[in-house]
Image (cartoon, rainbow, N blue to C red):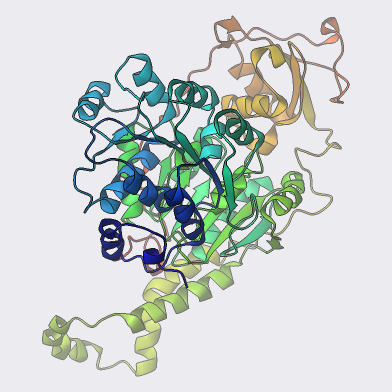
Length: 585
């Protein structure tokens, strides 16, 4: 087995590695470090999240820069503020014995003048988000004219977030003779374009296969009706008493709503999405890392940069638009050599995506059934038994033993056991005894995505491709605006300047009310009932549509905020079997 001393690292770094408790390098570290130390070169490294990429570029970067010089020699671009701060903190640990090393984090949401002052004091390494870095370059606050090394960390994540132009602008301001190191979990076309445009004959290393998920993660899916999605989520949490999970939703609104419902039902949950202030996001992440929050409900963008090694489950409340994003989601668990599970709750209309994801990750899903109430009660009961069995006895209890024995003297051993466990078991049993089972939707079950629905109303809306919408983006827009379930909006057909969509007839009045006097980017939006049947061939002429009234700007009453900061109302299952309480510190 390779050890760090064989990779060519200096003594000060090896000492820091020893302090950190690293025993042997991961595969990406063992491959990348010798290449980067041998000579200045460009590098493309493909490796999954959680494989130790920060150390793979961090140790060589610290060793190669000149600590006697105060100008900026190394730049690391990362997708989020959280990852930026995390990398900066890790570099401080890596370089604790490298005298004179100074690393500064540059990111949005903090004072730009304070960051400028920190850089002017001397910073050999800057860790930055692309947007803030571009802004500071434009203002002349940062000088990268002597940059020797540029690292693009989580490159695919940055490009997914729309930072392509920012990255290309930043690289265009840097010296051509610098070395560029690109680290990414996947290799989409945009990442490949960056490599071709700004890198010179880069060396390539791949840990595992491209886009393939780590073998430490198992993948399961659960087929349910749309109306059962939330109850299915609760059961998946309840059947795993030690759960410490990330739950992924597609939109900010769903993220907030799911988190609030979990809190109201007594779970230690919190939301993480773009509508939270930076201080709220910091509070959420601190609580999650400390395991005061056991269920983090997040959007894909907000969750980027989360680096927590002990996550047991990733639960896909909804699948992402881009199947490649699933790789990043599942990579949040099964880290640092541990095992994890990635669970998907999906409806029939989403089933086709499973095969696409299987091809990308190189692994098969297993279809599982949502656990019954009886299974959950049994799992929780024996978890409690084991927890009691493993509990360390507090010697202070001895003083109370005589009184306790006196109070319990009339109880047999069997009665005592029954009564003790019934304190918790009865509440849990009462919650699930009449809950019934969650079964798979039958082939004949009505589904909003079905082409055979006859109880739908089809609408015309004067938004289309010219407004920047494709069918998925328009579906998201309608779903958020109407506050309906995702599967409630169907047959979205986007044209150049207008589109069509279907909802259930029962939701027809709601659509008409919400879109009354509605405006989008300063333009009045017109929504009308149409006789178009919903084929992909387009709609009827406008004068054939049944006209209905004008439209109104909707007031959004859904407040955003830190869900975990308030207490949810008590429920039957609030204290059951400790799985809703904070983990013991």
